[in-house]
Length: 182
Image 1 (cartoon, rainbow, N blue to C red):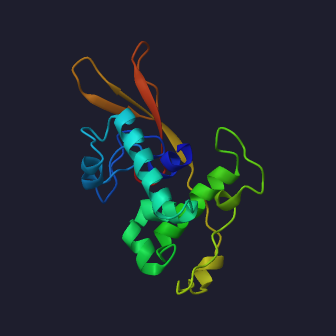
Image 2: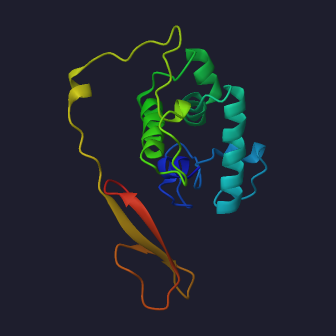
């Protein structure tokens, strides 16, 4: 779950995606309502609902973690339609990112190296088109540098965010965001 939260929101409980997904596990409002979430920004509600939803997807796709992750990102109908991980760049990158996090020991306990689909790509299912080889696939991509931000609310109830810590004695949250567009 930590790897999913890291990929979805970088542990920012107030995160809102450009498509409207909310909170730590980036629940879409209709999904959140379906799962009984009253406040998608409440960390406890969001994590419990996101975990239940991921469990449902794991059951739907017979425990295949990459397919369940793809369904979490692109929707279960897209995974069914393509007979595997959809050929969407975002979804493939999402599944790979979580697998990298899990393979790098991100989980609380490091499982043995031969422990199934968490660490090995899922075999290509029949009918799933291969991504075309292009010059951009081989181009080196520089990872974005994470930056820490401090968020706090002052005595007047106004929210603040800064790269510098708040005044002493102020209760704050520290969140990470990418350099481009926070």
